[in-house]
Image 1 (cartoon, rainbow, N blue to C red):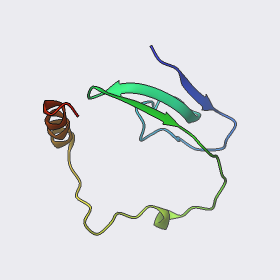
Image 2: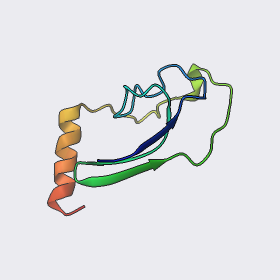
Image 3: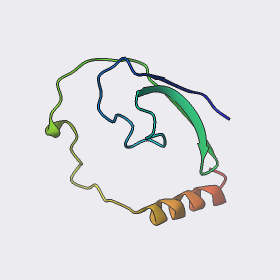
Image 4: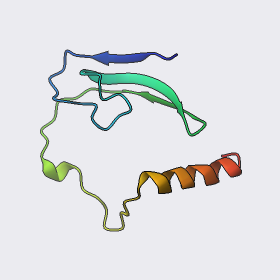
Length: 83
């Protein structure tokens, strides 16, 4: 079991579509989980209201997209070395 802390007091449409918890309709402020044998803890340090546009999130020129299978292979390699 684990705790998830979130707020539904911030105006945000579908804020968790990219998280492991898309069913939560509020903005997640803190959670932890084990994935690929790694304990991951995510915690908000600051909340700000800023103007945003589609240019706010750009991929670097050397960005390479990988699929889930390749991500799993990478994590398996880390596990081999105890990382």
